Length: 100
Image (cartoon, rainbow, N blue to C red; front, side, top):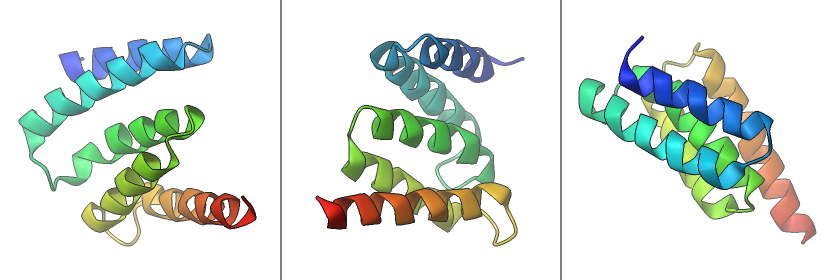
């Protein structure tokens, strides 16, 4: 397991215990390491982007969550499972924004 994956695992543990601020920091660090390793437009970034976006959403950073999810949609192939998931979350964010 590489360092980015280790940090991602630690971030997920922090999410499970409800410490979203710690999870956000760890997800950012994991994402940056992975981005450095694979490049900004690699589909290998998708799970890192998705999880970072979800933590932003949990912290009510909806604009940042939407930005990340839109980016994810542009870097993965049409049949990638996270592409559909990202689109669903984007629709939910848009609906919540309309209701507010």
